[in-house]
Image (cartoon, rainbow, N blue to C red; front, top):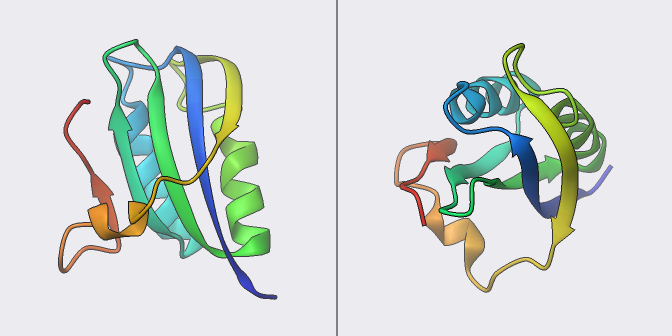
Length: 99
């Protein structure tokens, strides 16, 4: 199966509940590269890159999130130009600063 890139915004009670760390662990477990970051509007934004089935599974897992989260929506976003370049050198999946 070919590789895909998907950028999503997760809305709900997703900050202050370990969502970024959970996302990083799940993505690494699925063999996905990318990044995750909080947004000032209270949402979490993530980029997932890898095999289509793994990226689809990761997006499905984001609908649940960690135990203390409450996810209201996972919305597809247009991929930002050069979004994959935000992955820190030497990391497969990065937690980025809030934007």
